[in-house]
Length: 201
Image 1 (cartoon, rainbow, N blue to C red):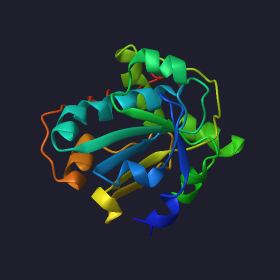
Image 2 (tube, helix red, strand yellow):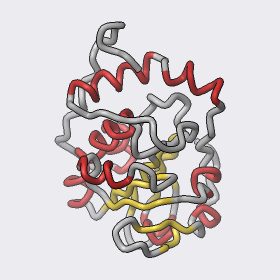
Image 3 (cartoon, helix red, strand yellow):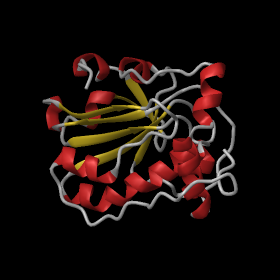
């Protein structure tokens, strides 16, 4: 886990997608432990499936006074994402992508994105998403990666810092609950066997 300067990250501004209000990142963990889920983009099929997965923990997180927060790098696709009901937590925007940069969420190049997007991890998650009726599109910034940051109440320490290598990378539910020290009855989505017939992207 990379060394994260929470004081620096915490000063960046995010836009609340409900109120339009700008808030400092550190306000999200000031009064409670916070799970910050950084999406690559709102139209990403894998991101939508992962958002639905992590949202399975929302009742257990709420019961333990833990915030579940989704953060996107741009407004493109936000409305459709909200209408799809993929995510159960609060949603914010980091349009300047300063938090993404400080947390090491890299940007792909056009050359590196294609093999990553066609890799087995992405194909597996895409197949699972399609089986659940979750579709995606190619609108927005295709080159941004995402990840997750879990910060203890008051910014005392980083409990988990995850950076995507492949667009198909995500944190399993059991790893999230373990990092938080909470028990959950949420059942993770089962990854299908991927072959050329069911995996198209």
